[in-house]
Structures are given as structure tokens and as C-alpha cells.
Length: 357
Image (cartoon, rainbow, N blue to C red; front, side, top):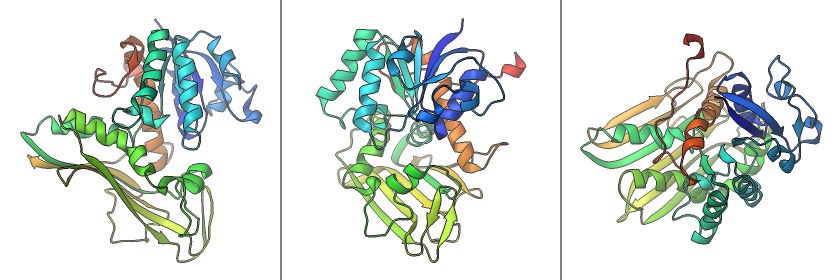
């Protein structure tokens, strides 16, 4: 029996998630919601970059989307610069009796000890009202710093520290809002973008740290953060736009979950726009970019995850992985108990092999 799914947001992750919803026989696409006026009325196949006509055309009306009576909504709308609105969307969807799986809002990946209890209660109340559940995931925050480290930690007799890293060249990442407004690439070093406003790193990746802590049976005392940025030695262009000389062209930041004064869980990002910038920072395990999980314990591990794709580079592959994790989780989330669901309480989510059926 197919699962009826509506889709929201056709940006970098959303477009690839939509393509799987159209081609995966487990799902029936009921509708698509977009925020860009130029996309309204376009066929879902065109928005997904597929050479197919689905007969499902895009709307900018969330109520019209819910009227198609989906079992689940895939929420991939931009939330970095509109978190309150994104949470509000999810509340409406859940209360309408529709499950939610998505890449945003990230704070709902694991909101406990991060969001005030009264706000978490609103999400749980909406889910109970609609007998629906919600699961927010991706690659980072997502499986690279929850599913993978927890799987390896499950073989350890003792765990002392977990470090999860993304080491990547973002020059080919085509998302101007994320690159310039959120991360601050191409901006003067004395200008603080959204990501480096006080406390934002701890909010954005605090979900991953607290979820890992819960999986390891501990509760961190505090979350600290730090960052450093490197200027461009000369002007150059990237997929998202222009990077002036002297503006931010590389960055490294850490978010640390502290216990008794010691960092026990660390999320580290090393992000460059050129491979020659800051060679002293961590280098990826493959050209372009990779993820790394380091566990100090007994035994200890260093695990490199190197995504690749026949349709693009490391950045494209990572986005495909995020979209795949979202869409493949739909059956488990539809079957789950009402409320906010996490990697810790969902069954193991796997992909399918349709060509082998």
C-alpha cells in the first residue's frame, strides 16, 4: 500500500527529496507547496528536475496542500532565517493529522534541554491532537552525528569522547542565502552572520550533541562554541556568487558538549571555498569533502565517510544523502507513536533496491 505524501520546499534538499517521492513506488505524491511565485503552477516533475509529467502542480497555499489529505508531509522549506514560521507550519500540519518528516526546523531534531518546555509541549499537543508524529533529520545535523557515531559506540566497552566532523570545500554549493547570509562567506570579517551570533551554533548543533549524549547515557552540563575565519587572499567566484578579497573564504568552528569541565561530545566543521586555504586545518579523506567520526574509548575509532555521486560532486552527494535519509524514514514515522520522534526511538531506517524486486 502506497503512502500519500505532500512535499514542501524545492530548494537544494527539497528538490532531491521530491525526485525520490516521484520515482519511489512506496509513495504517492499528493501535492507540492513552494514559496517562490515563479514556481507556482509548475509540474512536480519539472521542479524535481525530472523528465516526467506527474499532473501534480505546485501551490503556495499550505491549506490547499493539506486538503489533498496526505499521510505525511516532507518539510524541506528554508528555516535558518525563519525558525518561528517553520515551527508554526509544522504545528499546523501535525494538528491537521499529517505526519512530518523533514530537514527543518532543525531545533526539533532533539529539542529537549534546548527549547523551553512550553514550546516543546505545543508541538507534542499538536501531534496528539492530530495523532501524528514528526522526525527532523539530514546529514549534519543528522545521520553523520547521530546514527553513525551511536552505531560505532555500540561496540565500545568504554567511551571517553566523541568528535564528529564535516570537512568540505563549499565552492560548488549553490545556495546564496545559506552561504552569504547564514554562514557569512564573502562578508567582511568584522561582520557577524546569523551562524556566529552568540548562542546560534549551540542551538543549531546542540540538538545533535544532546541527542548523542542521551544515546550514550549522559547529560552534558554545558555547551560551548568557538570559531575562527580566514580571509580571501584575492577575489574569486564560487557557485553562489562573488567572494571579494579580504572577505571570509574559510571557517572552522566547534560546538562542545561539556561534562565536569571536559569536552565529551564535539561537533567540528572545517569549511573552505578553496582547497589551498588554511592547510593546517583538518583535511578531508577524499578530494572536496568528507565526514569523520572519531571515538576515544575502548576500542577507539576513526571513521571517514566519503559521499560520492554519479550526478555531481561531494556537495551534491551529501545533499542526496540528506534527502534520502528524510524520504526513507517516512514509513517508520507514519507507523510511529504520536509526538516528536528521534533517531533514538525510530527503528533502523534503510534504503530500498527497487531494481532487485
